[in-house]
Length: 123
Length: 232
Image (cartoon, one colour):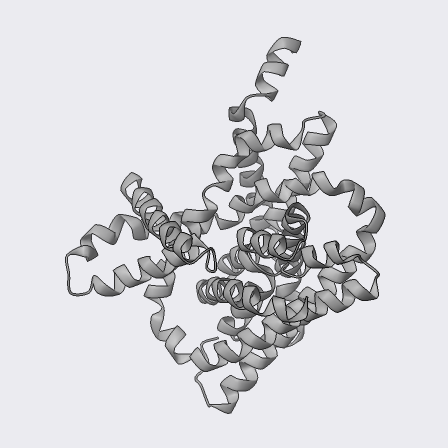
């Protein structure tokens, strides 16, 4: 597990270095995600595959608890209680209507194009 | 309890780190016991419980975050970890590439424009609108976009969480009502609309949904940061 977390941190670190030179256009962890994907793809023919094993198991454990990682930022809502008291209802309506509209448009476009090009279902 | 001990423990990072993890474990157990009820979302339960604890005991958010930041920090490595399922399920991604790209642009445009026009309709000022516009993007990126638009990044962090929880709560009943059984489509939609919190929800429902949700989250971070400037 320690090896796994170390690899993840190193990939993130590389990602952050590249993000610095891209002036923050793409966030470091997202670049790290692309890098780890690239490393796994390259590992098919090289000994990196064995090295990546602990990272794979650590990643699954981490992703199983992904939600927990948003709790500290979420509790930050208590710093905005004044705005919530004043504009809470309209803020809530704006966020929820937009989120539901986004869900519907996205899923509808996705399935419409999938049917159009005759893709197979993976449901 | 000894008053001095209480003061000592309340200020210690160890207490709030333990409280966050303990509350999360209980919330997760409750959510798993009631899978049919999407309102029982573990992120929502944990946030509400801890927010109540802090206000009852008059603890400042900064004091709480001093401990909870160790969990918050793991968001970076966890985002990197999303590269693993992407690799493992690459064939599914390849098979759905074109629908993904089209849905990405349509969804991203909907997320940004609907927020801006609803915000204007309700008479929010420009700073608030700029803070709300990137609400469907994962927190760290949304805060960077918001500050670039002269918004308030702290407010952005709060609305990002609201958008995340909203999507995580409504996605299952909404998709069931629309009779959509394609888990790649369901996952992609919730990751686009509700970033990491939607992705956490998607992983708890179906691994394929989780994968497409994580992809949508990463791609939407890119697209939103490019298109948001067209409307503000």
